[in-house]
Length: 462
Picture 1 (cartoon, helix red, strand yellow):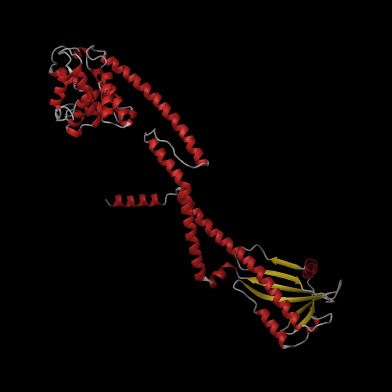
Picture 2: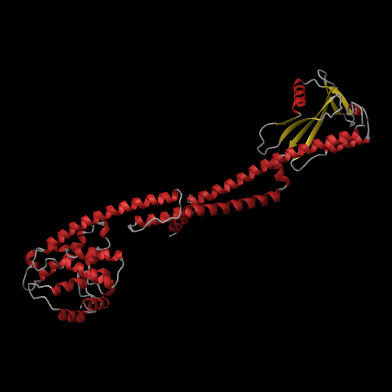
């Protein structure tokens, strides 16, 4: 018992997490949404980096401009070796320039007197006083020369994927009238996504949760929109696989799904045609067999075909749906196919049958049911063939079924079979007239015949 419960639980769990197309699309949209969020943060960080560098450059340049006296050709060099409070304030402001994502780690000024002259660095000593010194780094000198031609140099140290990194920025801040060339060099530390997350844990968690929910919702909506017609086609296909070949694939889609539905409809039409042709061939073969069986005795010649006609008329009077009418027709055609095992001498015998002979006759429903047992398409008609000699009161054969335990189609066949037997001549009697048959049916309602079906038959035929 416990093992069954565990097995059912595991089966249910695996079924729930089955990677259906809809669930895959939902997961894909969720991952896609998170990826978009990540790329958005990366893009915004890069935009903010540009803005921060531009802002920092302007602030420092404006502060330096405010420090230098008007006029003269060496305004920035005039600040060298001076100790003034406004210079120290400018340095303090520069050191404190930062944002949530960036910090200014250092800035340097470089000056060149003219073409071919040495580059010197204007740096800040430990006392926050501007000093100068020669630049001996050949690579730095090349970068400074390049900056004079390009005006700005922006150099991230590698591709930014959200990890903390450093950016070097150079800008030519030489102004009209300056005799020397001045280059401002900034080094920016970009904190990255981890630092941003640590500084804004709750906000980012809320944003991430919202992004996750929206992505999941969009995934559900899009998967439902795309998967719904496929699911509909799948249900139709399952119904067809179960044998209902009258179904049609319906879809309003004008895309590949619509083309698939049309192709499936064409395929099913071909299959339906092939099945119909095979069924007609098989039915024709069996009908020929039943005719040969009926022909074993001139008393029963044409019996199966007449019973089929009566059963079809009763089906219209009831009325029955097309599928049930089709099954009834096949059952009526084949209802006496089991008589192939009954000797002709018994079928033609003019007197009453002996007990042994009657027992042999009573085997024909079972024989007929066994003959078609291996034909899957006739599974629905087999009970009608097997039980068409059962009586409403339980007095029939082969199993003595009673009332509504007798299959519905078998009850209809009983009426059609008995009607033809009464109407036609037999070795032991002449065929009965309409009034005699009516009286017989009235008397046997609720005994041999289903009373409701017998009433419909009497009103329609008699």
